Image (cartoon, rainbow, N blue to C red; front, side, top):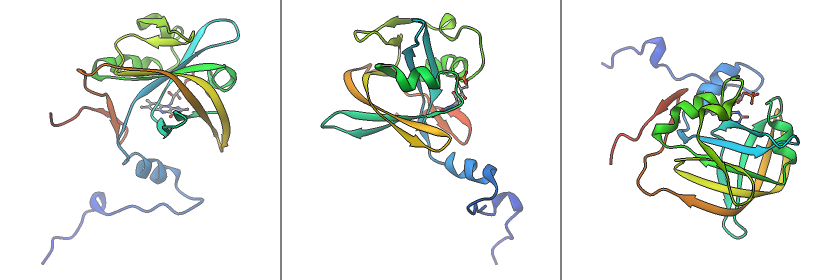
Length: 175
Ligand SMILES: Cc1cc2nc3c(=O)[nH]c(=O)nc-3n(C[C@H](O)[C@H](O)[C@H](O)COP(=O)(O)O)c2cc1C
């Protein structure tokens, strides 16, 4: 006879309109990479935030998207800037991911960065960087969906990705 399941092992269920914690936990089962999305604000200052809602959209034209919380400090610049960058992080950039997801005074002060060809802040040593022109901004509930057309993509072939799964940072388990 099978052993009885403890509460911790029982599948949990989300129903529309209830229990946002279960919904978040269910969504957290989708393992992702981690990015920092950056742009220059109206005062000429670099701004950015950590985001794992990144996905590719189209190869022709080359489009990608990221979902940004409407309440994020960088929401206005990111939704209006002509260009932005998606910096895909590698394992050594976990400190940058933490900095860009918490209310620190100067996020760019703790991280090596430079302006890219298209005038967007590029984080040094990223796994890959997509410099984009704003293509569209769509409604996404309490987020907006920022679609960019890739102008330039660079990547570093020798580094491992920083991963995020069930609310924790992870690394690949295999080569
Ligand atoms: C791993 C990880 C992924 C995140 N993904 C997103 C995301 O896709 N979109 C988003 O708006 N916020 C995301 N956040 C939260 C933002 O980084 C954070 O709320 C934001 O930077 C808060 O500061 P701000 O309002 O000063 O920008 C994520 C945070 C972490 C740690």
